[in-house]
Length: 497
Image (cartoon, rainbow, N blue to C red):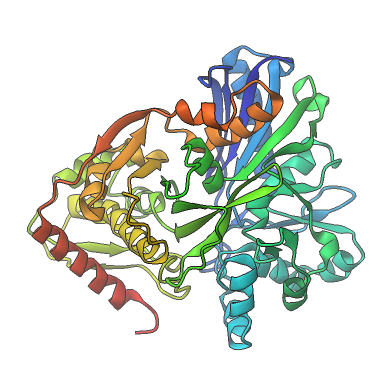
């Protein structure tokens, strides 16, 4: 066994495998995109077999580029798109249906039904979550009700449910490990985050048999061993965390009050609250940030469904840009006299609005509005939404001794224009780290520290390095005017007005 660590970063639009050496430097990587399937309006699916194929390909490609063998790898860490829901045959491992993606809204009516029945309060108390189609529980309930014979087979113990991590571990170990970690479990609407157990009462409400659920482990644990026939040698799987939780770890946000925001397909801000479970009064989520050595540490989370996806829309839908990297340069050329707002509610609005029926809208268009204004509106929408999350966090977690500095990561943060505008609109410093692959780094640290080839938490935190700090420069009156315009645009977009 060598000292290298592979991180599998299984995302919403692509899969990456990144190999880190003993000094936590990237030595090889592979990445492959897969299809986005849209069977109906508001529905989003992935083919589980395509996901699996991209994982195997990416690992082999990373090994090839790093000029390494599987025997050189000390451990595998996995981080994954959360809430995306799969069911498969316990004997064959064959999926019964496409994966239902976290963005999917098909269970909106079921969520409304559960709310009207008065169940949201117990779900919020036990899981820290709201009744929204975003989460796995109602997706699983839908699958059991709509896939022919699924419920009866589930009750007989013939089926497995899992988020993407569980499915990948099952496949990597040849069906020997049916497990997940506490962070992914905490996003299902079925896991009691206080007691750290699957909650029988919630399972009964959702009509989900416990037999389909995986065992829940710490984030750094023995998840099984990847079959030697896959890559040429057995590799232990020693770390797992949902992507946003892995980013908290990769950003070394280990102390209460530390805050990170990841800008990928969506945007997710997490505020570490330590061992305290902070109940939000402003429609944020309470979630397990990570669980180590049997102890859970918690976070307040704000979830934005569309961030980088708005840039993809400009590229693939409107075709006003050729590549995502053009957006910042184009936005910088926008006419300052035009206040154009994009509310990117393409799949509803997340925190703090939680409006599943809202749909995207643009405001302030004139005949002079062009690609530059569209680009600026798309990037500013991400900044405005982040500001909404931070405002809610300030209200829920009052700590006058803590000056908020936002640590950022994800593909969008490479844009200086976007990060400066983010700092301007939230009126707070924004720190961009040297290592932008913090999600993969977090998963790698979980596995590497468990394997004994990477440092402990304290020493790992000391390795975090800042590339650049962005300080707010915008005039207060300009900021206030722009924020007022944003709030008006959101109000006009909500489905209940």
